[in-house]
Image 1 (cartoon, helix red, strand yellow):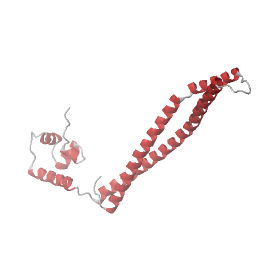
Image 2: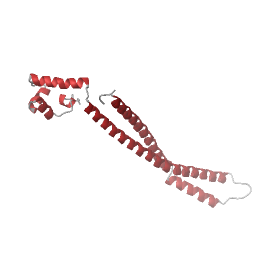
Image 3: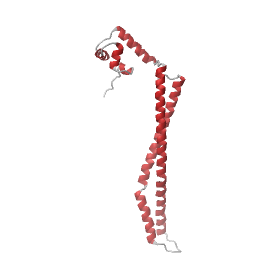
Image 4: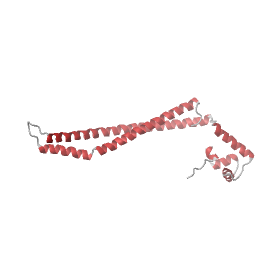
Length: 190
């Protein structure tokens, strides 16, 4: 699929109707001109040329810069809010992971201890086989109920949140730099 080339009106950030009103031609005349099927009066072409020069030199006045600053500040607030939300979600998921990981590991150890005691019985006293079976059964049921699969899902979510945190931090730094450049007058358009 071929991409459409932006129209002159779109480049200037105005609609076809607004463009035709500015140039004092009908919308149909303007549309035909954009399609290359009609010419415009000389005065209209001169005004259009002035508008396009504005685009080329990117001469942004104080009002435009003020709007850019306001929008960048809103963007910064939005990113800061998203970053706080992300940090909260990381905290919550960390709180979920810790007990599941601890429970998983302790149940693995319990299964290992029962296996060791079953295969290497102590020489001094006989152990209750039924008790060992109960301990092993409980540990295995707990692992099946909330084992490695659940832990993996939570760890993947945690990793995604950490990546999101990096992206948000990077975007926030970029917005902060852009705002500083706009305020210092080093950047006229963003």
